[in-house]
Image (tube, rainbow, N blue to C red):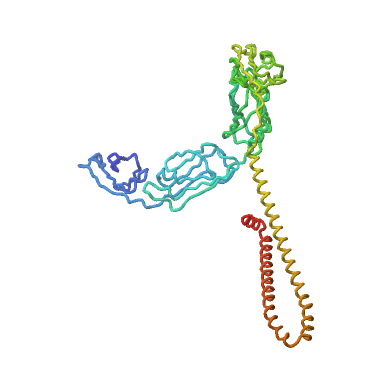
Amino acid sequence: MEQAFSYSDGERTFNSDDGVFTWIGNKTIFTPLEPFEYDTEYTVTISTLASDISGNPMTSSYTWHFTTGRDDVSPNIVAQTPMGGNVSIYTLITISFDEPMNKTSVESAFIIVPYMNGSFTWVENTLIFTPELKFDYGTTYHVHIGIEAKDLAGNAMGFPYQFSFTTEPDIYPPEIIGHYPSGDEVDINIIITITFNETMQHSSVEESFSIVPYVEGNFSWMDNILMFTPLILINDTTYTVTINEGAEDLAGNALLSQYQFSFTTKKDPYPPQIMAVEPIGVDIPLDSVIRIRFSEAMNLSTLYSAFRIRPYVAGTLSWENDTLVFSPNAKLAKSTVYNVTILSSATDLAGNPMIENYTWQFETEAVKPAQATPFPWDVFFFWFFILIIAIILVLVYYEYIYKRRKREEEEGEIEEKREKKPQKKLEEEPKEEFEEEEKPVEEDEGKPEEKFEEEPEEKLEEELEGKEFEKKLEEEEELEEKMEEDPLEELEELLEEE
């Protein structure tokens, strides 16, 4: 009977080997090794191979169908590793679920803090995270699986899941696991690299670095790799690089012993070349300095002896950044053509001579006649204008002073007249009284008429003089007030009146 048993989900067919039979009398129970799929129709068949104890087979096959229920249960995490402390820095993270999962959703819901790059793999219902690099020593990591993780039926986790672990402390000294370059025939335009097996304290490593012969350069880092870029290396030279025991990792563990390696640069096969010269052309200033820039460092003794200038000029030679500099002791001769030559006997530091002599020429300037200095008309007109303004201001000022003094004199005369008139009246009054006593009545009768005729004229003159005096006083006060407020504006008004 067991051989006659089979069932199918429409895609796959299973038989007696995919489960276990249990018999109770004439009843058998089949337990699948794998659970049935949710929401799936299965077809079970008992073929005619089934027979009774006497060997009589079934006259026809027997078939029936059943459908499993729909999955509406949220998935759960049933196990995870690692946990706790002192975890190896080379560990893997595993998370096991209680049912098959939608792998993409689980991987998207996975978070680790501090962040680390890594890759995912699956073994049945277990997710495995393999870090791209090893974990850091003495560090606590937090792993989080969000509710975005779903099973194959689309059921999300009921709640987020998280756990933590702490890696072991770093008690191991760092090691150098590689370097570059090495050997002979090394190009002079290389970068020296030293690779460590873990993250290092950059400053301690750079301070522990040395190179003989000494070369200036710049440090940089890429992960655990120290890179030293020399400013210049010399051909056909052996260099020795050393990292001493002062180099430490982030935990303060130092190298057990110094690390040293050597390399030799290749010989220079190229002859030196002249890249630029100055001065060149005509009308060259008499105080010029001659400069010749080379393609590389030169042997100075051969270079100095290869320098020529015609006509001869006394001077000194010096070397500045691949440039030969000739400084004449005195000014060059005027209107003279000079020929400068570097002989082919000049060699670089590797002993390579120049391919051929190098010659060029330049002509100095002629002495120009002295030119008359042009008259500064702009300066002249500026100061002339200033002088005119000053004269006008002085004239206005003296005009103002003149008018003021004249006004004061007029006021003084008016004051004198006022003082004299009362005295005159006093002198005239007694005389009139005396004459009144002696004159007859007829004369007295005529007197009032004279007084009537004379007194109004005198009073009118006094009133006019008083009004003119008061008007002048008011004008003077107004002028003084304006001068106190803005004397320049008053002077300008007076200037306009003039």
